[in-house]
Amino acid sequence: MAGIADKDAAGPGQIVLAATPIGNIGDATNRLIGLLESADIIAAEDTRRLHRLVSALGITTRGRIISYHEHNEASRTADLLEMVRGGATLLMVTDAGMPAVSDPGFRLVEAAAAEGLTVTAAPGPSAVLTALALSGLPTDRFCFEGFLPRKPGERSSRLAKLANEQRTMVFFEAPHRLEPMLRALDEAFGPGRRAAVARELTKLHEQVLRGPLRELLEWAEAGDVRGEIAVVVEGAPDAAPEQAADHVGAVNSLVEKGIRLKDAVAAVAEDARISKRELYSAVLETRS
Image (cartoon, rainbow, N blue to C red; front, side):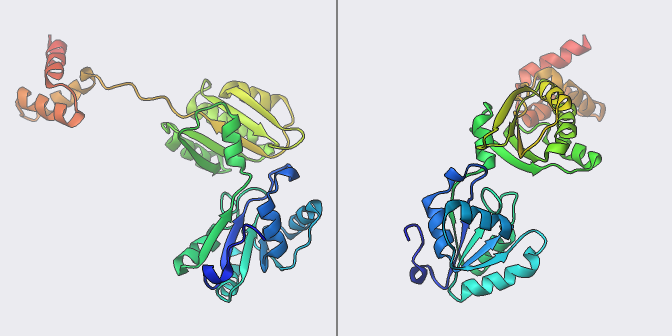
């Protein structure tokens, strides 16, 4: 089947991370179909969802199907690696999207990489990239933050660390927690920060709302939000360039310690990478 690496050339075996549709079954690639049909082992986050996917695609699997999720990753990773060492092609799939991205798979990849076992991917649908592309926000630099902590204090602490993040940020959230999440974003980043809420991506009722955080919060407060949710938030604006006057206090502190004004100005200007002449003038202006 095209797209499956030569097992003999790859070594003892291989692990293939395969992206599955995030909503629209038509997004299943030919390579994914071939891997499902031919893999020796399929590690699935939810075996019931895997069977539904296989049925919808009208195909038959020949390999052994094993459940592999967040609650049994630690206990089953070693067994899966042993099978790969023995020459098996192990296909890793999750409920939707790419394994190891806010889904099971990272532990398996980490352990396989440490042993030098072959790990490859059959890329495909991604809720992160789809939401980012549809958000209307800058895409040249972005970061994925996954799910925020559920507890208000921990969530506020995390957002405080992101307040000055200049890259576009992508989050996941459960529909019943969207309203408190947007309220926390509004408080941490300000009501005017641009954002987008992407709901039910690639599905029949796909919806992408764009606007300031306050408007999105009001939308969430007014209705019963359902479906899979991704939230994209604009990064913080560039900080205003530093002015000489911003560093007068540092100069005065050094002078109070007995350092000559000229030397204090030179030291602060060098550290702040600003003009000594402008800083000296700013100091004299405040004293006058």
